Structures are given as C-alpha cells and as structure tokens.
Length: 344
Image 1 (cartoon, helix red, strand yellow):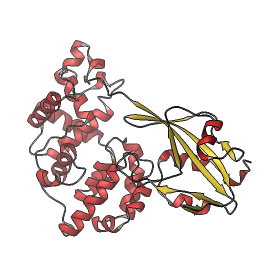
Image 2 (tube, one colour):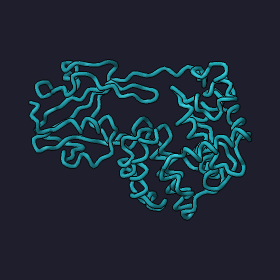
Image 3 (spheres, one colour):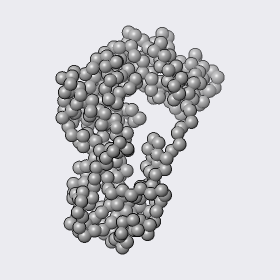
Image 4 (cartoon, helix red, strand yellow):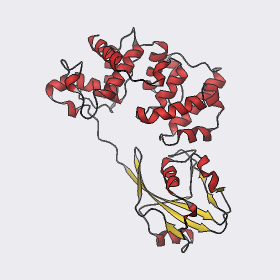
C-alpha cells in the first residue's frame, strides 16, 4: 500500500489541468480514453474539446454521420477508433436509452473497448477496483519491481495485470489509476526519467541495479511492410477533381482519397504513363517520395497532377474538397497544393 500511497500523494501535487479530470461523466471519460490510445495528451486535447462541443451527449454523437465523425477525427490516426466510437455511441443511444454501462464487464463489451479502457472508465467513474495497464504503467512497474518479462508477450500481459491488480487502492481506484499513468508519462519517462527526485527511488530495483534504460523489455517488433502509393490528382477545365471513399477493411476505411495506383516500387513518369494512357498532361508534384509511417507499414507516396478536359466519374469541385474526411497524408498535400498555380 506504501507504493500506491506515494503515487497518489505525488499525483495530488502534480496532476495536470485537463478537462476530463473535472468530470466523472462516463461519456466524456470514454471519449478521452479512446482518443488518447496511441496519442499524446497535447495532441488529443484539441480533438477532445472539438468533439465535446460538437457532440455534447452520446445522442449527438450517435446521430452524426460517420463521414462527419471521421472528418473531426482527421489527423488523429488509427481511424478504427473513431468508427468503433461511433458504432458504440449508436448502441448506447438506441439500445441502452443513452445510459452508459456502469461495470467493467459491461463496458468491455463496447466495440473498441479492451481491458485498459474498461478499467479506466469503471475505476474513475464508478469506483470499481480495476487496475489500468498501459505503456506508462508497464514502464513504472517493470522498473520499480525489476521485471524482465516482455510486456508484449502473453505471459507479460498476464503478469503485469495481476501485479497491477494487487497494487490498486480499493478506496480510491480512480485516483490511483490516474496517478500511475501520469507518473509514467511525466516522471518515469521512457527517456531521461527523473530518478533523482522520484518518490520511489529508495526502493526501485531498476535504479539500484542500473537497468533503467533496459526496462521494460519488449519482444522484437514485427517487420514493417513498404508500400508505394501513386495518387492521381486530376484537374479538369471546369475546376473539378476525382475523389472516392475508401472501402474494405484496410487502412483508412471510410476516408476519401484520389485515384490510387499502388506499385511494387517507386515508378517514373514514363512508367505511370503506360498505366493510365496519359503522357504530356502529367506532372509530379513532389520530387521526393513522402514517407508516411503507420504502425505496421510505411507508405512511399507520390502525387501526380493530371490535366483532363472533362471528368466523368467521382467528380467534385475543388472548392468543396476540404469538406471530405481524408487521411492526414492527403490533408497535408491539400494544404500545399493550389490547382490554379499553373502546372502545365
């Protein structure tokens, strides 16, 4: 209990002024937890504020179109989070009459919610003693207790969850969970942790054994797949372009993109021309490939400007293009591209 008391005391002195810390409304806590998966607080904060203003209740989120939800999510990445959020909002609004599930087991049944998120919501909102285990918690526990079990192994996931569960303060589980997460984010950092001023430094095994930089242990990452994207940015005489919704279960489902040709390696203008029966009316926008890094794949991307007299399918006006939800890769291109600059 000394471990949890020290962390909670540290938290009371150092807790961050964040909007989701000022409520126990499970809808708002849920929003924040989903947004902060794979996302740093400073990046997710503006999205949280936008979402809570646009969708102040679960009913508002449920009534929104998926396209609008994805547009507001644009830039956060991992778009399946947004689709699952929207799906679960409709379930809560329509099947549960807007009443958010109040137990760990019921919360975990929501689409896109796993052990960590269900533990966070149930402890913070409903005082249930369910310990959170995220990247920050893995780091704190592995260093303090000197645990070398890989955190991304089945054995590690089980070991750390069981350990975390023995440490949580049943009288204030929400405060303890937020304390250890914040402590990992702000104090026991991945690089350059603040060991000299750490409230646990008199009993931290990794500090004593000088193994701070070696923990936590993680099994070797999976091989990164390289993909080569060639986007065709059509421009017609009447200021139209082509944009279509990305279907299927792959990356960016539900987002919009320009016509895409994927190749096994980077290609030249001549090689592209053979595939689309164009030649004189193609200009490469970016001299160097843009490398867009996703968790399991890297996209090497070229944007090709293609001049056409008339477009016959999936045509939209350039003036309306920014209304569509697009991957951040395309959003960045649109910020730097002006079709009236005269590329031909």
